Length: 299
Length: 235
Image (cartoon, rainbow over all chains, first blue to last red; front, side, top):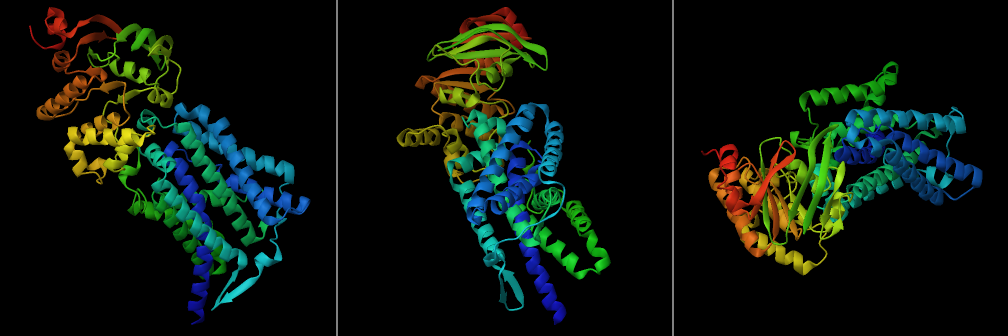
C-alpha cells in the first residue's frame, strides 16, 4: 500500500512538472509550426522571466502579481527582439541557419545573465501564503501548485479557443499549413510570427516562475534543459500539433518523475537521459509523434 | 490596369526575367505562354510580391506596387491562384474559403461571394466541412479558384490552372474562366496548354527564357506559323 501511495505522489509530482513542460512545449510547437524553427533560446526566455521576478521582488519589493505581469512583458519583449534581430534576417537562408542562430542566442542570453547576476545558484522563495501546504488525501500541494494547475488549465483552454475560433488563430493555422499561400490570402505573416513569439515567450516566463517556485533555486542555465525537454515533448506529441505538445508535456513530466521516484537513487541522476531515451523509443515506433502525421511536415 | 515596365528579376543571382514589359487593360483576359522554365511563374510571383524585382516597376491602377509586401498587394485587389493550387490541406473547405476572404470586411460582400462560388462549384458546398487535403486534384483547383474569388479580385492571376488535371476537368476549369471573363474580371492566365489559353484569352504574350518574344491578339497568334510550330504542336 505504501508503494502505491508513493506511486500516486510521484504521479502528482509528474503532473506538476508536466504542466510546465506542456505550456513551454505549446510555445515551441507554435513557432516551429509556422517557421520550422527549433528555437533553442526558448528555454532561456524562461530564465529571463525568472530573473526579472527575482530583481523586482527582492530589490524593489514589488508585490508578486505585479512582478509576474512585468516578467511576462519583459520576456515577450526579449522574445520579439530575438525574432527581429536573430531570426527574421535569416528567414530565407534556410532552417539550418536559424537553428544555429537560435543556439547563439541561447548561449548569449545565458552568458549575459551570468555576467549580470553571477553564475551562482540563488535561493528563490515565494511569499509564505503561496508555499503553504494543503493536504488532500495522501497528497500535499502548495497553494502555488493549485494556482499552477488552474492557470495551465485556463491557459490551454483559452489558447485552443483563440486558435480555433479567432481571425488571428485561423491565420496562425493557415501559416503553419502553408506559409506562401497565407501571404497570398493577404495575411501579414510577420504579424502572425510576432504573435506566435509573443505567446510563446509569455508562456515561457510563466512556466519559469512555476519551475522556480517548485525547486526554490534558480541559476542562469536553469531554462536550457527544461527548454530542451519541452522541445522533446513537442516532438513526442507530434510537432506542430498543439494538443500533441500538451500531451507530450504531461507524458514526459510524469515519466520523468516516476523514473526519479521509483528507480534506485543511483539511477536518479540519469532522469534527463531517461527523458531523451523515451523520446527516441517513441519516435522509433511513431516517427511523426503520437498525434502527428506525415502531413504535419510542410510539403 | 496593370502595367509592367522593364521588369527584371534575379533568382539566386541568375537573372530569370530580362527587362520585360506588359500591359493588362481593365476587363481583359491576357495569356502568358511559354515553355517550362521560361519564367512565367516568376512573373506572377513578382506581381504578387512573393519575389522582389531587381529593377523595373509594376503599376496597378496607377500605383507603384513593386516594393509593396504581399498582403498589401492582396489588399489592393490582386489575387493570385498559385501553381500547384497551394490550398490549406489540413483545414476544411470552409476555412480555406474564409481565408480567401481574410481581408474582406463587408459581410454582405462575403456572403455574395460565397454564393457565387457555390453556384460555380456546387461540389465545394457539399464538402464544406471536409478536410481540403482529401479533395481530388480537380476539386482542389476549384477550391483554389473559389478561394481567390472570395478575395473579391480586381485582377486575378492564374498559374497553370489546368496542370495535372484530366481533360474533362480541364474543360470544366476553362469554362469557369470563361464565365468569370463574361463577368468582367480582369485576368492574367499563365498556361502551358497554349491552345486553350489562346482560345479563351483576348491577348497574349509569349515568354522565352525570360524575354517577351511575341505579343498580340490571341486570335492572331493562334494563326501565327511560329507559334503553331513551337507551342501548338501543329504544322
